[in-house]
Length: 80
View (cartoon, rainbow, N blue to C red):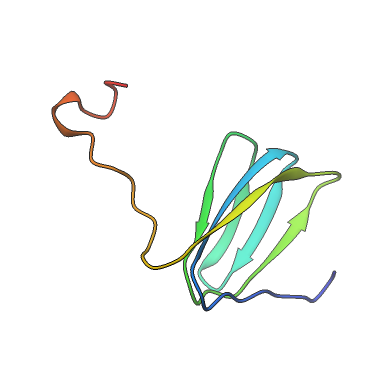
């Protein structure tokens, strides 16, 4: 799928690769996403994905509001 770009005007994409490395090109720059990492592509951003060999993972589309991480409160970032 060379010279192909995607655009989502409905919600944010949460991309989690389980196997294989993703090379994501957006309007804002380039990202390298490996297994055990996540990538959030906000609504309205044009992007394309290049693969290195076989890959597997999942994509979630978030409607309504942007993705935000929950507050951890008094336990801090390393408490969990």
